[in-house]
Image (cartoon, rainbow, N blue to C red):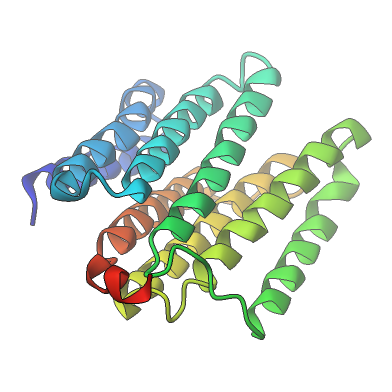
Length: 229
C-alpha cells in the first residue's frame, strides 16, 4: 500500500474515533486533513498522468470537498456556514461530473436505456419526502438543486459503463452511491429525524466514497484513446 494512503486512513480512523467519543478538538483537527491527505495520495499516483484533463478536475473536486468540510465544521456558529458548505459540495459534484466524462475512452458518456436512472429518481423522491416538509421554503430550493446535481453525478458515473475499464466503472459508481448515502444521512439527521451516530455514519460513508471515486478514476486506462478518436 502506498505510504501516503496509510496517512489518509490513519486520519480517517482518528476522525471516526473523534466522532464516536465526541472529542471535538480531535474532530476539528482530523476532518480538514482528510482531503489534504487524499489529495497528496492522488497527486502521487497520478503524477505520470498529470497532463490528462481529468486529473485537474479531480484535484479541483477534492479542493472544493476540503472547503466544504471546513465550512460544515462551523455550522454551529451560523447557519450560513451550512449553505457555504452546501455550495462547495455542489461545485464538487459538478466538477466530478466533468471528471467522469473526461475519464472515458471517447471523452463522452455512453447514455443509453437503463433501469438505473429510475432507481436514482425513486431514491431522490424518497429523500424529498423525508426532508422537504420539515424545512422552510427558502431552504427547499437549494436542497432541490443540490439533489438534482447529486443525481446527475451518480448518473454520470453510471453512464461511463463500457467507456472505461470495468474496475474503474465499478469503483466510481460505488463511491458515488456512498456519497449520496452520506449526504442523505446528513440531510435527514439535520432537517427531519434524528439518526443515532449520524456523524459517524456520514463521515464513514464519505471517507470511503471519496477513496473509491479517486481510486476508480486512477484505474481508468487511456490506452484505447487513440483507437477511439
